[in-house]
Image (cartoon, rainbow, N blue to C red; front, side, top):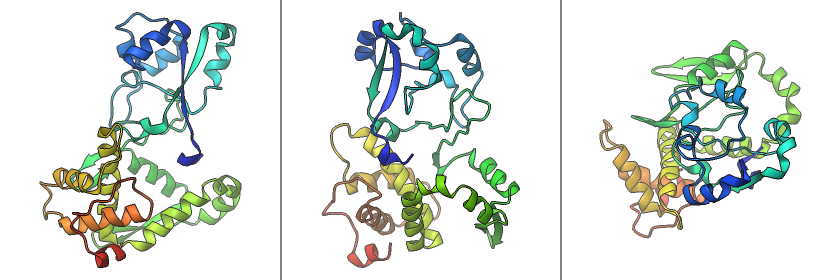
Length: 270
């Protein structure tokens, strides 16, 4: 499923909890345990979740969990209580909040994969990414070649077979894949850090603007503040050109700033 196809998220709750949720919001398991409420959770699942720690993040019980679709195994298990349950619709805007973690399965599953990015010296960093890259390499889907101090990632010997085997599934992601390929083709290696940094910072700025889109200057200030200790320092004009370029290409939702320090020639280079 692509992000633009996701119109809402769901939260399953007991009807008696709705008033509290409207007043205090949807709480994590840990915070909910400190207020009076009627739990609809399955204890066996909660016992497993209590042992899970999100890589690079917190304990799973410190997160408020939402569903892409409420018609899931939990709701099926609770069908005998259907008259007492409700499904709350939650805006997908919460996905842009800092610290949000998305999984590809039940977060307590043995097979779930977490990928949570956070700020680092050279851009957003996910400590779990290396393990996933290793899995792709071990299965022959990609191979890494050293290029000086960097690595080039290229298709591995099993890539073509895997593409054919999963062609129908990958068709759902064709637009996203083509958009990413188009973006990468426009960038030099040195621009990748800037693009990733600007895109990640945009989410943080957007989360602070509850009722309005951030401006290009808001985002520029956020990036320069984040990178103020970077050595060598980032060039403000390069950051500004990246912000304007990604905005023009539709990768950022920001308001244009007439005082953004960028030239038309620099934007055309993104």
